[in-house]
Image 1 (tube, rainbow, N blue to C red):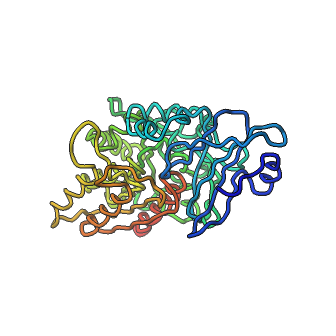
Image 2: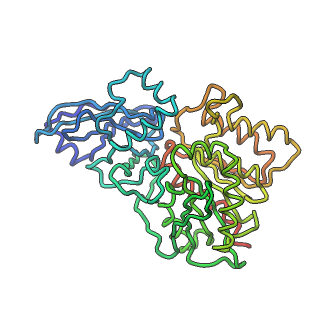
Image 3: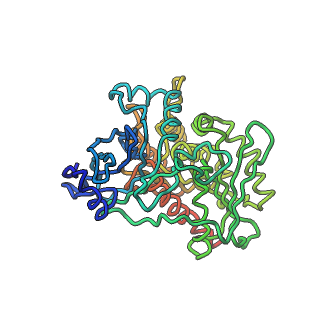
Length: 416
């Protein structure tokens, strides 16, 4: 942590450097001190998607010149990192020891309840000028694909060497964005559909299916702008929502019902209602985390339906709880090994963040899973691209990954 700021001097310090203080360190690292004021007690800092994934209790420094309590927390990150953070009031983990915190994080039921509690008590940095939607908080949201309350927002932070990102929110201006609920059975779910401002030359529209639609539909305006400016060809996007946070885990980790829903309900519905393309060469499936795992597995199972997959921070290490077996990534790798002479006729674009947490078991972590999967898949697929981004399991990685991945995978559509 940089030199401890004196609370009485905080007003002038924040006016000069903002609510986050940075100081260069050795080996390309930056010392970062997060500082905030307020009478909330206790306060924790939640830097999302990085190795210290749980909130960290902040240090109370005392009152500033106006009598407000000053809170601070220091950490070190690579200087090219882009992060998102928020503050948590009355953090239930604040007084727990490391062992108890780890046990809570490892328990599926306790973790789900814990995340809901943390989200309900979180808020973005009130002194920062920018904020972005909290992807974690939007998961499972049925009615609103955009943030609705203060706890739905987090604050972005780009360190001095980080690549630039434009965090402005872009509404859909030229295309159309509508949320519908196709189907009537238990697998029916909301689908937010983006329709571009112009039609494809062949009379049907190329299609991109994105998992976790309630968390990613807010990016539709960026695609709308890119298509309008000619940076991407026109294509239809179907943002497929989850029914709940818990159902998301059950379905995206490998429930065959999800495949049935897409094939028997959602994709035919898109073709009938929106003239979505039937040619798999013009259809992409995309997702992040468990959505990335589902995209990879679905593209492997149905190459007749999807000609490309965009896998962002794919949870290929995932092992279903409560039953023995290989983690999902190892299981898929084993299938590829058995199919040494069989081609997997898809184009695969994969990405990961350099600060992603080492989740998974001892056999396979997230970063290890991406590397092993890429090595195993390369001889089988038509094309494989792997990119890394300086950030964690979070929006600063997925936002450029979605843009860059779609730009790469849709480039050949211009010639159809």
